[in-house]
Image (cartoon, rainbow, N blue to C red; front, side, top):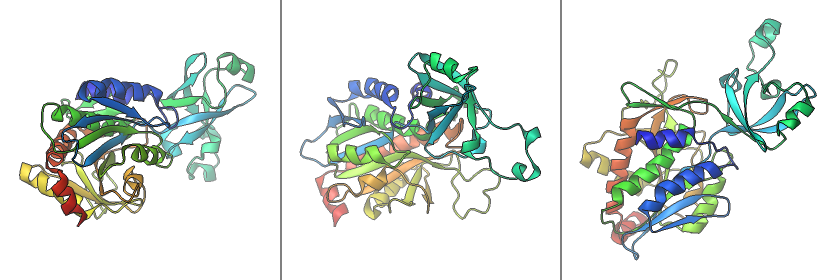
Length: 354
């Protein structure tokens, strides 16, 4: 699992530029399924048939990571850029990024006005994106052009995947949401030689970070009866989060979402997952967000409506160059979902829809 997570974390793919990550996912899911399907935006799933007459079950992470796009080059060769996905500018300062140009990759440093030159008022304000730039060592706009850099180029964070606490903690960029992609693959692995009373479509969407766009097109392709959005969640176990009414700790079990800004979890499906976790003796955590959302926001309103649940992992420092999550939480999420899928026959679907 850790090697798969490392490969997916270090793959490069911001919204609209997910080709490299999709290739990794194809390599992982092809041996486990009888057919790989893609929509025209680039979302990808593998189909594994247990009972062709059973419900259609969709499990999906999302391929894209938060990143940036080149929008302009200054006369002195500095790169202006736009965020793709939600970034807090203070998480970006002095970090390394990679610009993917037509002539190859170029490492750059995100820079800003030196702190020594800031006024007292500026020091007390959050830096604005418009005040940041990327330094690739170019001497002029012409120099940057010779490097192949031009508006529209993809920019990705640079961060090597690593582990902490004797391998139980995964650390790296893009855990949001290569962890969900890896979970979709892991469930297929665990179903490889197992009977299940349904048709499973497992994979990942594109452009989640900029508006759940691939979730809509993938749902149109798959036409699921049940859907699971596989994504990371917030960890509330760091200093400053003590007053949060909900506690989600890294390593204390997978997250089962009650609601977020895009979806209220389907009650019957949520209770099925919770009951299954209890039967397996696996701890889980719950969260309820008033802001943010997952691909479930599009899955559950597709077609004539799809019972949908978001399952994920408490993760620290998402939407930054380095996030932290638990391998054990990942393993337990895969165990729960595999067991749930084995229960989702036509009769169970009818029960959920009552």
